[in-house]
Amino acid sequence: MKELDFSGFPPGTITDYTTLVCLACIFDIFTKQIGLAPRSAYSEIKRYSPTIEELTSRTAVRPFFDSDEKHPRCPYCNAAKRWHARLDTHCIEGGKTTDAPRRKLLKSLEKKKDQFALLELKSDRRSAFFAWIDTLRISLDLDDPSWLLDATRAYLERKEPKQDWSAVFEELRTVRPSSRLEESWEREGARLFLAPPLYNESLLVQYLVSRSHEHGGRTLEGRLTLMELIRRMRRGGYLAAHNISTTDQFETFEKLLDEVAGSGQLKLYFVVDRREFLDKVKSVYASYA
Ligand SMILES: [Zn+2]
Image (cartoon, rainbow, N blue to C red; front, side, top):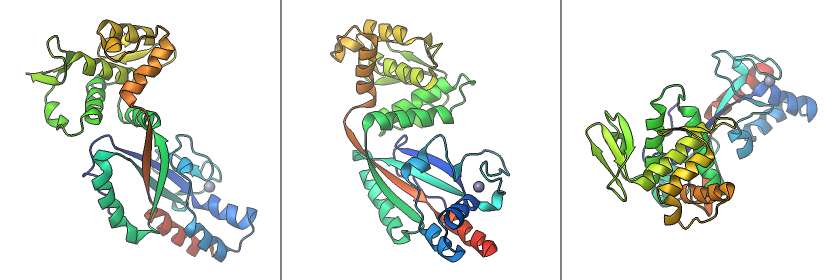
């Protein structure tokens, strides 16, 4: 199956989700619980369209499940692999930078309506930002110290999508705060210098990716608790520059998130790849009937 091409979208604007669905469980629900004959169950299941919640939840419930195994078994009914279908869901963040490539992509899929389900959801920048943080955490290996550079790069890509950050990060060894830049960045040899606001924002992202309840988060400045991170941002003038004057740390944190995540409404566009699902439903029905 040809993969969908998302290369026209800026980095960090697409979130991918994948889940397995057990067709034995679905047939069971439709024939035993709802009482349909196999033939009617088959035509219902072909039309069956899972909700966004079911497709993107990090904890799957029946008939959905997640597994990294090569030959997984359904955790609910023990069915073997030939009964499973993979559903891939791609979420596009709405916005100026994605409007043109999104229209182009969705137009190309319009004629394949049963193969690709297209769904829209009203959301907000804060939720989209945390979905992005979650995806980033899953894609990084936090045991390999180079994740700090990767997380910094991912944040810069999100913040300034027009810049070719892969070129900037090539052969890069360290990222440091600049003592002379007030904005933007510069590269010197194997070092990247970020203006303090940009550097502090990237620390916040590193903190969010790696934070745990007991130990704070890991950053380019070492392990920091929320209090230490805020203190650092206050010292660097970040809070004053963004008119954050509260002394309560959780209120400050909320305001920092508004700065870094952005606030306000946002539309999310979901493309659900149903091709494998349809193929498998057909072959399963053939053996079922
Ligand atoms: Zn099952």
